[in-house]
Length: 170
View 1 (cartoon, helix red, strand yellow):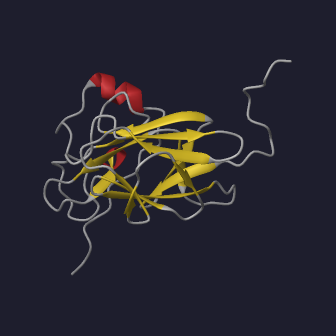
View 2 (cartoon, one colour; view 1 turned 90 degrees about the horizontal axis):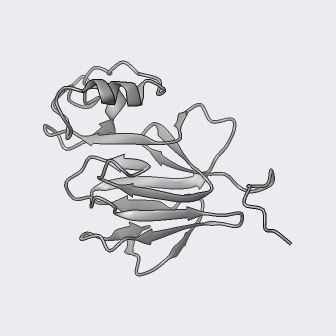
């Protein structure tokens, strides 16, 4: 009897939330880190190239630290091995905090299969690469390259672009 590798309709769907973005976690393995080969990329110097692995199957989602220098924390506690995630868990990778949850079809938050986060060199706030400027201070000198190449443009054309918000009024 062959085992089915397809996710059943009744299987839970998981996501990671960062600020106003949600990243769907596909069935299987999702790598989080600073490297270009990661499914979720965090442009933060305290994040390793391949920092953590999240494994999703029909029953649950598990996070594992990939021997990163700064480790991973779930709800403030450093994880020592594979750790099962539950709704509302706060995952700290480097200086970034993501919230784990179950995908709800009624969510108004923009969803992406993968995405990139930049760390503002001016105010140290993380923001979506697609915004092109820090929504907190308006700086355009993020943690990545100052100007995007044609390849980066082609790679991000499938993502909906948002206009940068203006800095908060004081």
